[in-house]
Image (cartoon, rainbow, N blue to C red; front, side, top):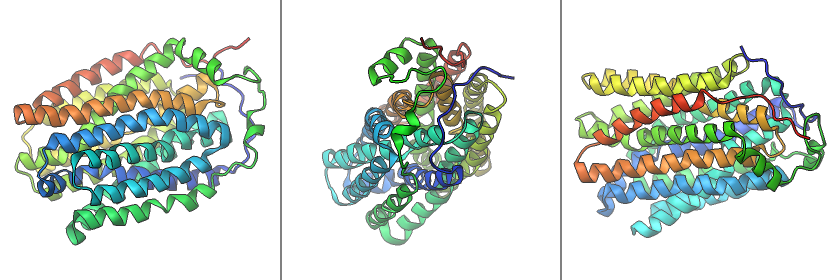
Amino acid sequence: MHNSRQPSSPAPSLSIVQVLACGAGVVTLSMGIRHGFGLWLQPITQAQGWTRESFAMALAIQNLTWGITGIFAGMVADRFGAFRVIVGGAILYALGLAGMALVNTPFLFTVFAGILIGTAQAGTTYAVIYGVIGRNVEPARRPWAMGVAAAAGSFGQFFMVPTEGFLINQWGWQDALLILGVAALLMIPLAYGLREPDLHSTHAPVAGQKPNQTIAHALQEAFSHPSFLLLTAGYFVCGFQVVFIAVHMPSYLKDMGQLPTVASYALAIIGLFNVFGTYGAGVLGQTFQKKNLLSLIYLTRSIAITIFLLSPLSPASVYVFSAVMGVLWLSTVPLTNAALANIFGVKHLSMLGGFVFCSHQVGSFMGVWLGGYLYDKNGNYDAVWFIAIALGVAAALINLPVKETAVVRA
């Protein structure tokens, strides 16, 4: 049980129902579209005559761009509110998807799929949405509320991945991307529900918080805090594992003789079970120490991957593995962000969450790029699977020393 003191919370300006409904809708679309990108690997590379590394590099750049621009998107959202950031992100998302469909060189594909969509994701996913949640949900319920938002992203994967597979089969990979571009614009009306009437009033001084803590002071405090650095390091592993699996497992399964529908169902199962995993993590995070839950998640991932590789491959083994990984998939997200809110408060939560998520995206870059590079070099994914197992054990150990108590400011 964990009963550490939590920072006081400013008075909310939006209802919890409104925040969760609109925030969940944005995350559902943004994360749902993203989770299906692995389905385009073979259609695009075969149609364009590119290597898998070319496609993987574009998505690696996407994840890295998402992480870097997420820091600045968080700063803007903390200062001016999430509404403007989400609207800009939705427009960039639509443009990026259209570019993916229309360009014919790896460089331009990387510009649209990597830089534009990566920037779009920074403004339409967890760091920005969790900032709104942190400002409008009381501390005791934050892990649960963040779990609900993460579960929405998981539902997006469950719903959108089969939908994207259907669109590809019915209209081809290019028209499918254009249709998704139109769907991305639906995030704009949802953003209206996240407009905070007077954002500056939510930053009034509260107990245990400096009245005018600047960005520089917040960063100095965070980067000198060991627990911030440990959470950041652990999140690297999360990104490496989940993005490698999301992007490369469809091709891995096809290489191993499985039908393409097995991969689509596998990604959908991950999304379905992640709904329960992320929501459950949020519920458990209200009672148990988040660092212990994080350690358990990372260790269990490594065990699940090991058993999957050692077992005879069949559709049944793929679906069981997908269900287990689904429970563990994004369950780190509400726990990590709730721990940050506990330690540092909510004034700069989107920015600090952006820095931690940047580490996640560096891991994502390495996972997706190494998957393509080592496949082209070795003809298989074995080495990357082994790296994912080792990193999971390391992350389990890294999270154990985290201290979740709130910082005491002079």
